[in-house]
Amino acid sequence: MDRVRELTDAVAVELIKLRRSLILLLMVVAPGMIGVLATMFVFTGNTTTEWPTFAMSNAAIWAFFMLPMTLTAITALLGQIESGAGSGGGMWTHLGTLPVRRSTTLIAKHLIALACLVIMSALLIVAVVAAGSIGSLLAPQNALQGELPFALLARVLGLMFLASWLMTAIQTGVALWSKNFVTPLVVGIGGTFVCVAATTAKSGKFFPWLLPVNVLTPDETRLWWVIGLSVVGGLAVATAVISLLSRRDVG
Image 1 (cartoon, rainbow, N blue to C red):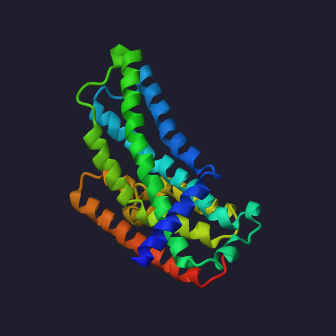
Image 2 (tube, helix red, strand yellow):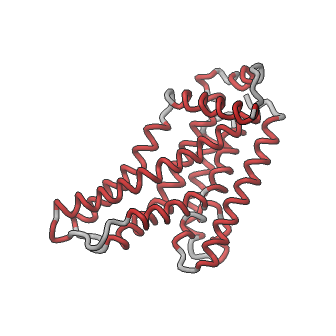
Image 3 (cartoon, rainbow, N blue to C red):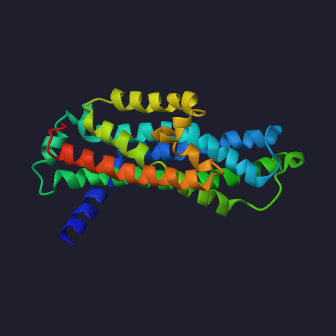
């Protein structure tokens, strides 16, 4: 119970720190950009007229590009709260003097990164449904047909969240390990652009940045293989990173 209370307090502290960062703004802007783009698609008639297909096409854009890029920025910002220039680079040393294990702080940061994904996924559901509805009102001739895809989007984005665990663990680990803002950005941007070349490759399903996209596969076996790889791999990478950084002066 003491460890649980310690972790809860560490998460609360990390949430307070977020008020001084751009993370909260990113969490709103990223789904909002998908919503604006989707509204334009409906308004101009450059999309399907079926709600399910419309929802899946926007989920694909999210998984392929916006999700990894936003996650890159969020994890980089999380890592720089203690290591950035504004902190003087000594915040980790200061944290080491507090009655909270460094591993607990590191776990809290990983949990915050995952929580950001959950919140963005929920906001994306609202953004996509709102975009389709607004676009249909503005251009009745292009109105989307069928039932609102709340359940469909919730399932797909929930699976994409699970498929993002490995990518999140890698990005968070790099951001916490690095003493600068550039390294995690290079890793994240590089991983995202490699996706373009690896999408059609047979080995693409092994690439962490492509795992969320693989959720859209019609092959159920491949789907659950991807989820298992991401969850197990994410837990393994996060555990290794926390173990290593707990014994290292990351400041």
